[in-house]
Length: 119
Image (tube, rainbow, N blue to C red):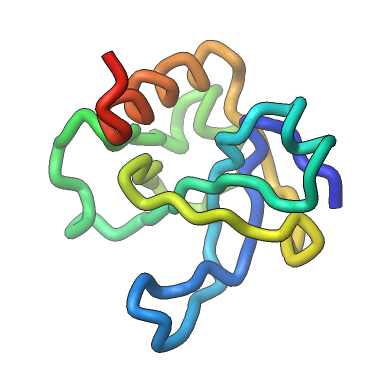
C-alpha cells in the first residue's frame, strides 16, 4: 500500500517489549519522498486512552468534534504519541482511514522535534 505523510492508517502495532501487538490507528510521519522510495514507513502511535495523555509537548490531541478531527475518521478523541514511533512495512498496513491536514502536520513536526531533540 502506498501511503502519504499525514495519513491515518490501521496497523498491527507491536508492543515495545515484543510480547504481542494490537490493531490500532497510527499516523504516517515519514516524508512522501521516502514513502515512495522504500517499503517501510515511520508511524506514530495514536491512542484514545486518557491515561496516556500526559500533557507533554511530544503529544498532539485530536478532538473529533472539530473539522480537522472529523477528517481523521477516528471514533474517539485521541492522542498522537510522537514519542512512540515505529518503522513498519507499508505492505502490512491494513487500510487508510483518514488524514491530518498539512497545517496540523506542522504541529506534529514540532512534537517530533521535541521527541528527537531537534532544536
